[in-house]
Image (tube, rainbow, N blue to C red; front, side):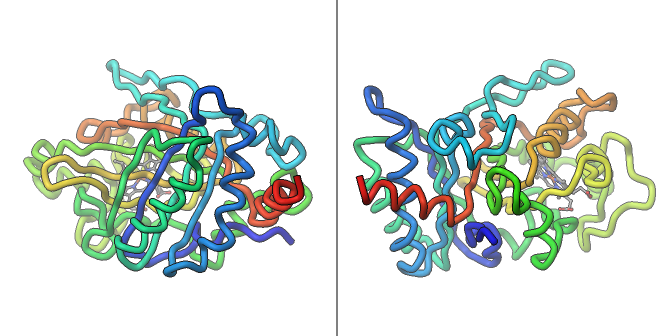
Amino acid sequence: MSSPQSGIFALGTAAHAYLEFDVSSGRAGAELVPAISSLREPRTTMGGVNLVAGFRPELWHEVAPDEAPAGLHGFNGDIIGRDGFAMPATQHDAVLWLSGSAYDVVFEVARKAIAELAPAASVAAETSSWPYRHDRDLTGFIDGTENPTLNDAPSLILIPEGSPGAGGTILLLQKWVHDASAWEALAVETQERVIGRRKLDSLELEEKATDSHVASTDQDRFGKIFRRNMPYGTVTDHGTMFVGFSSEQGPLSTMLESMAGLAGGARDALTMYTRALTGAYYFVPSTDSLRRIATIRQRS
Ligand code: HEM
């Protein structure tokens, strides 16, 4: 039985950092994978910080072809939706998602990780995030209501035993900036129509608009995913870090197409008030795969 990276399921942490890395010029991408794999053992037990590591699918495939899910690919082209709406592709080589009880420990562990990965790779993008009113995103709505429970999530979003990449999962990381003034100018009933749920208690509306966010991402239609979204940003410039996991790429990519109005329906009404700034897919291997790669490195 392959064990997943436990930070994926570590709910309730108050501070998060997402560091996306690019391989330094003149260095081989294949150096970065063992370097990151070697990071995790001491780090997961330091200061109570959870560390989740992911790799650009093509890079992981190059280093561990037998442990790579077939057909998995990076976010290699912009998604151009209706009315000129676009979701940009900003794929990087690797990601570290650190989460902990407070930002000081996340900050320290993140800095040590960056130092250890230099000069093979450097940080290309960094976002830190924090929970807002327990489980709400910065639209003010509860985010995660339709998430599978922690009991069900592993069997739904991990690659099953016997398949390449078993115990691993696919991460879509996408940073969305909110147009807070436009959103907050809407009446609560209009916001609820946009999301498809009630604001106060997240109850699903009996009659959902076809362009509502929950209709655009309906898991009965597209497949189950597990979301660990977090608010990010400053008082004047903020939004949602979308952090979604699936055992297959299809549910994530078709949800994005649907939100952009490319799945035979309308464009997601939420995209009138939020805009994707980034988009990348990462393969998040099992801890067994990471350990294997780290051991090969130690021996060589
Ligand atoms: C600005 C970005 C986003 C915000 C603020 C946001 C917020 C929300 C909220 C408030 C809900 C309703 C409660 C819940 O079930 O969690 C929801 C549902 C959902 N969202 Fe998002 N979301 C965003 C982007 C995305 C993206 C990019 C995806 C997929 C790639 C996505 C997938 C889903 C799914 C699968 C559901 C549950 C749908 C169902 O009822 O089956 N969301 N989101």
